[in-house]
Length: 152
Image (cartoon, rainbow, N blue to C red):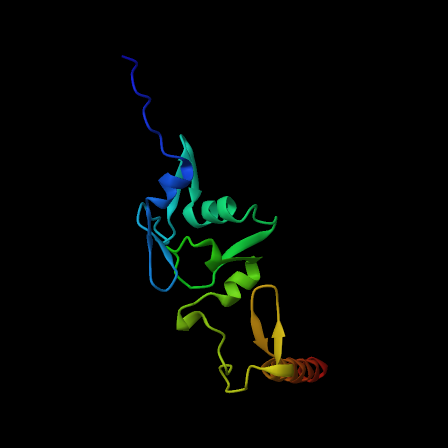
């Protein structure tokens, strides 16, 4: 009697066996999670993917170069490709939920509003232009005093 072939589930079947479908449409990853809350999946021996990235690539297609996947549902363990949108990294970070202490402050330390034309930007931060003018005026005043002192 010939030996029965061992049933090997497809990658999609293996993937979906680790998904719990919620009423809100989220597909919650029930297998391993990384420390940051995202799931991971090994579709083949030795290859690991973020579960949400594998889901998007399998069900939707390649992720465009230079783009990251944004969880529209704000649930990191969700792997539903309909809840994922390719966006730029800066857009993904802008949309993301951040702790309150990392959100842009509405006022500077001196109480000036941090909006509109009063906000300047460097590569890493925002600054108050009114405070910048005050600092510039103070530097000019100190230079004048120093010149006057040097001349006497």
